[in-house]
Image (cartoon, rainbow over all chains, first blue to last red; front, side, top):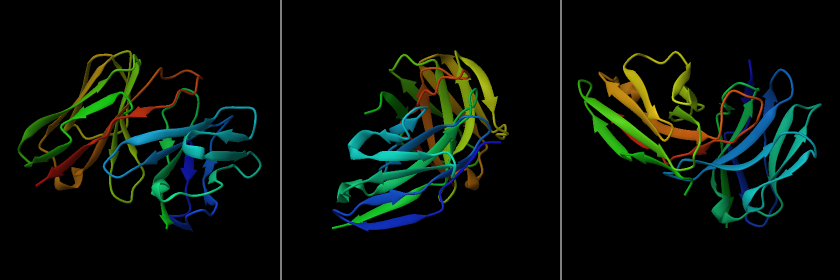
Length: 112
Length: 116
C-alpha cells in the first residue's frame, strides 16, 4: 500500500530564510508526488507535482521540491520565506489507478 | 478560486437530523471526490466518482451517502450522525481517475460540520 510521512508537525522559520518541509513516501513502482497548501478556512491548493524527469520541480509562489529516489523523499523548499507562506502543507503520493494518499500535514510558521 | 464550490460552508446539525452537502465543479472534470479532514489526522478519502460512477468507497459508515447526478455535481447526504463525525468535509475534482496520468486534484473550500 502507498503511504507518505511528514515527520514534522510544525516548522518555524524567520522571514527571508530558506525553508524546507520534509516528506518521505512508500509506493510500489514509480511514484507521482504532489504538494498542496491549505490556508485557514480554505481548501487545499495545488503547489507542484513530480511525474518523471528532472528531480527538481518548480511550482507556484516560488516553491520547489526535490525528488530523491534513493532516499524516497520529496522535500518542499523555498529560498526565502515570506510571512504569507504560513499555512498547512500536505505531501501526497499516487499510485497509477489510485486516488491520492496524503500525509498528516506540516504547519509552517514564518516569523517576521 | 479553484473552480470547485461547496455549500453550505458551515453546518450544525443534531444527531437525528438529515442534511446534505453540495459540491459543484466548473472545470469540466470527470472525477470527483469526498474527503474528511479531522484535527491532527491525515485527510481521509471517503468516496470517488468517475464519470458519475462510484469507484471507491473506503469503509465509510452508511450514515454517509454520496450521490453524483452528473459530472459537475456531487452530494453527500448525512443522517443520524455522531459527534465524532464533526470535521471539515472537502470536495475535490480531477480531470480523470484510474489511469496512469497523474492529474492533480482541485479542492473546494470545504464544509465545516458540527454534530451536536
